[in-house]
Length: 387
Image 1 (cartoon, helix red, strand yellow):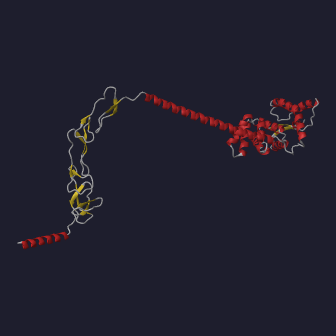
Image 2 (image 1 turned 180 degrees about the vertical axis):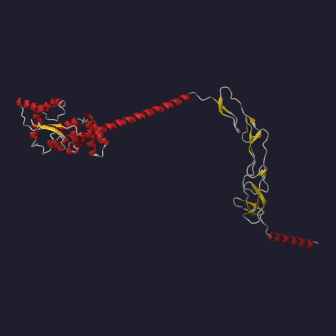
């Protein structure tokens, strides 16, 4: 009996040893994202809106998937479910805002005038009014009740007014600052242009060596002797206009100079160039030719004395600067526009009168003679008489 027991025990131990050597498949596998374990292997999930109809037999593959039925069941995510989830019906006090589809469950919401906070079981009726002394801060919604609070303080309105006023003041100050900057800039620009113009005037008023200036002493003496006769010539300037636009050096000027000479002033000085020049009268019938010669003055006078010459003719500093600014890159056009302005204001005959008077005043005798000769060549002089 004891031997039989020993044999049975040994057989049992042997069977246990054999069973330990038999390998069984794992019940749970370590699967990748998007997979699920089944019978020790990993299968790919079925997409949302479907379920697993047949599981895979090859690891890391997808079995057979079956679509859920719209309005009956659904699955919202990728899954390994054998059955779709059933759609719910909205409970009493709720209304449906979106029907059930195979990828999304039915969406329900409390009826109007009710709300359901997070995790509630039943809809709760919203407040219909705020307590006395409070105002509605936020209306009732599907998830929150009406919110009440104290009215906005009146100070907020005044704060807004202060902000608006402050903004307007800042804007006015900005505009005022910009205006001041513009004025300063224009003044500096004008002063710079005036200094440049004055420098040009001083340079242009210095006579060339070819204009009968032998020495500084002679020029000083001539300028001192010229003063009485210059005043005489200015007094006669007004009367000259009444003599049918006769150019400078009319007989009346000569007779006045003779009177001056009889009072002890020499008539041989070079400063009184007008007393030695004949009187001329311009034809006005050939206006087109006359104006052509008039605008040729810019070529005859040239550029060396031009700005001073135009001021002597009667253009203001502002006239000259405006034209120079408008035609900054074209000096020839500047000269043309200055002559045109002079003609438009005075007429071509009076403009010639001013030109001849200015040439004499600046002692530009050669230019004076060239302009006379140009008028003669065009047959624009009616008569020429000597004193």
